[in-house]
Image (cartoon, rainbow, N blue to C red; front, side, top):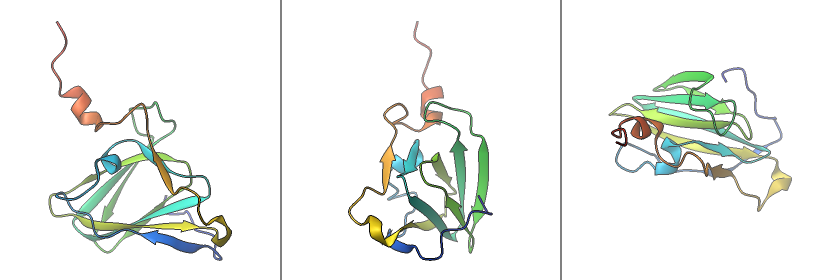
Length: 128
């Protein structure tokens, strides 16, 4: 991820407010991806955000793990399945970069398969 470069003529279509443990949308903690032609730039202001990247929507074992610390950012490519975990003191936002001619298109989508944090799936007791 660190070597990904957003095309130089692209613009930020949307920036989120700052997320913390208290206000992070559940969708960011589960499998989701950016839409076709959209790069997601995670900018960490405090604490750490750990990015887990998956080869496919159905994978539960990440192929990438990137720890993003305060003052750093990382870029997720278009249509790449991922989720994040936050340290207790984390504060970050996301910039969505897209071609200026792509106005009106969706920026991301959530997984229909993994719609709860993966850890929660493993914390459930086995059915008898």
